[in-house]
Amino acid sequence: MNLKALPRMGRPLLIILALGAWAGLAHYGSAGHGNPDLSAALGVAPLILAAALLWPGRSPGGMLFAAALALGLVGLLWPRLRESVPLLYYIQHLGAHLALGIFFGRTLRAESTPLITQLAQAMSATELSARKLRYTRRVTQVWTGYFLVNALVSTLLFLFAPREIWSFHANILSWPLIASLFLGEHLFRRRILPPEERPGVGEVIQAYLRISRTQRNPASSTPP
Image (cartoon, rainbow, N blue to C red; front, side):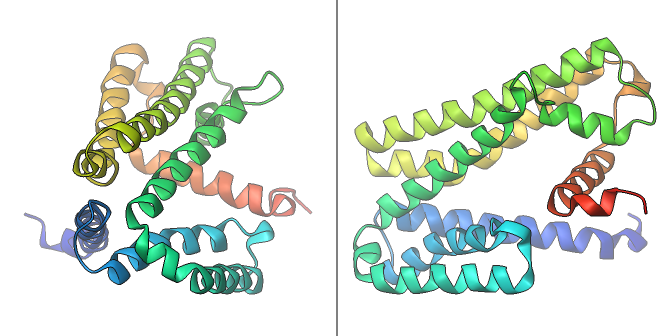
């Protein structure tokens, strides 16, 4: 094992461990067990973070204001939140999947460029081939469908299945499902596209970050 790689592996490993711990505690709490205050706090934490990150412009002051506003609202609703922990986690899971489904799906409109196509264009120095344009549009459709279908499955399980089954699906199974979809798309891409049209994971992440920065600050992408 390359010891020099350990520092680089440390941060992703810590993130994975933190997500795993959060998923386990969320499953335990949303199934109706554990301390309701701790379970509710874990449930609202991602919502407060989302409120800050979705603040228009994403200025530090605006993000802090959004987080403070969300915290104030949580404080007002706390008695009800701690008494409705499963519903809180359901709203969180449903909201995240609907938001992601809309985020991907709105780029499939006729006047828009599919999100995966945008990523591919950000990584390519030349014009994308017709084959890759078709492929990236299909992948965008697949991710849109996944998020919307999973939101529907979550709703059906929450309404009609035992709480433990819904909680396992929402808090534990969602991560392996996403990883499986990533892996399946990667394997399918290797069969469909030639090597020069298959980017690595690192390139995809860098392209997404570039697109995010451009969307937050369009002026920064325009040369002086």
